[in-house]
Image 1 (tube, helix red, strand yellow):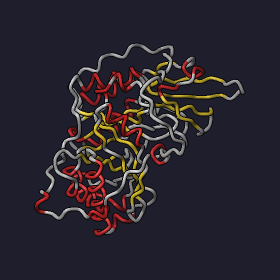
Image 2 (cartoon, helix red, strand yellow):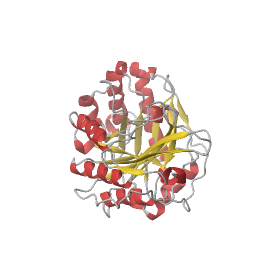
Image 3 (tube, rainbow, N blue to C red):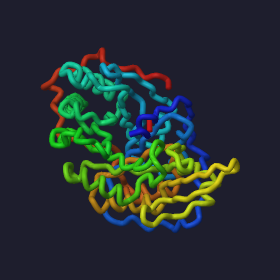
Image 4 (spheres, helix red, strand yellow):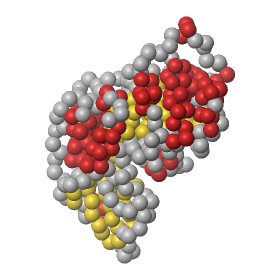
Length: 370
């Protein structure tokens, strides 16, 4: 999906744990109703280096996130691993007692998947990475989904699962809603901790203006995945952002929830059908704009949906866009004592029955996501 394909931002930003202001309260926003229902067991917070990378006010809601999933590693087509770890982000996550499960994404077609030896080599590399950095697991973000690699991807998930250190190491797969049959759920599900359903970008930069994640659209996407995977292994994606389009075009810019311009919030009203904020206005230059962005009510509705379907949890795109009210909703859903990290998917093979990964696959951490 376009949002995930363009998420590596060149401009760096040091994480700050103090002082990001929330977005102004637009007219038409009512106080969100309590989510109710059963507790969720985890909230995965994606993170990417860039202009919006700060974690404030997360320090006030430390239990709103259980898994910190930063975009730190990239696999090239042949399987070599590129690293862009951010040391400041790592320190901030550690201070908040979040378990780190870094994202590994792709730079080009994953030709290494077509080779048994290629898959195994990458699985060993990722295992060594988890061991050397004491990560809580790995998040595989292989997009866009490729039907040609359906069987190979399932085999790769098995390999990574079998090589991860035993004892609470999680394995996640970011799931493209419109996959075209690219996933072998029956083969992958036993080896995964959870699928993270990227239930956002219904409309985005490159499409006509419209809701980012209308509740009805999210509900339909969720129903599809629940027909092939157990609810206990599904995290529902939440959008902490929106878009502003030039009217009549597909040109759009991202609107982080904590940085909604006053010109936008002043013209925003709540769409009760799609459960998002929307509106139009004319800028000082005479340009007409259309915008949609997530609302507290919309987030509450999606969290309630996750609870009613007894899902494992939620996945947030992304940390750096958050506001206090948004984090408060997630923390409320998790309860006062959320899970501290991912559960082990299935049963890892004993280290006594398989060779240790080669030390040559270990990666050093540079000083330095979605």
